[in-house]
Length: 201
Image (cartoon, rainbow, N blue to C red; front, side, top):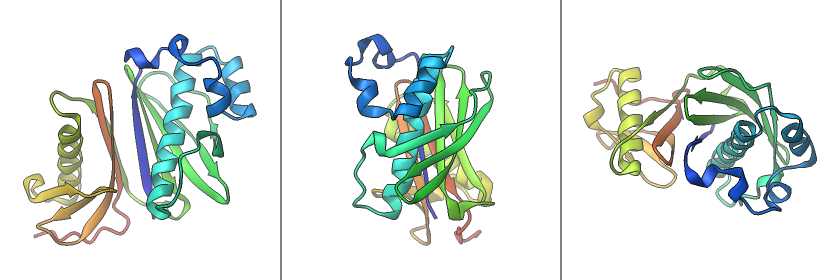
């Protein structure tokens, strides 16, 4: 079982499409994705939703097969029409023989994508993005620990997010895989509680 996530700050200067290399889209997106971008009234938003989807699926795939290399065009995204701010688009990401379920949430100036492996169907998946101050790596870990602690009725101060890929541990016992991300002003995380046996006391 595997979950990956990615967040994009749409107001960050590096997300300006005009600043990207002229051949960027050809290197990153397949023909159907480029057609969707050309037809979209919200090209900027869709561009980064597709990118975040690819990144999140890559992270989920990397956890299953550590030798996986990120080649964006190999991660093919099918995504429902983008909703209004505060809504969620759904779809799938295909990578060779694997399929990942996809959700993309639009929250103000951020796009947050979460990809889950097929065997996560019906699992409880926690995910959240928020603005953060200070060190983004520490902020993402705090966000994950707080959400996991709340979901499992554990003291977040007793949860540690460690390692690469990251895992949550409770008093150095059983692990739960966690995906962390940050970009610009935002941090985010996602994890599945499907196989969680973290102790409740």
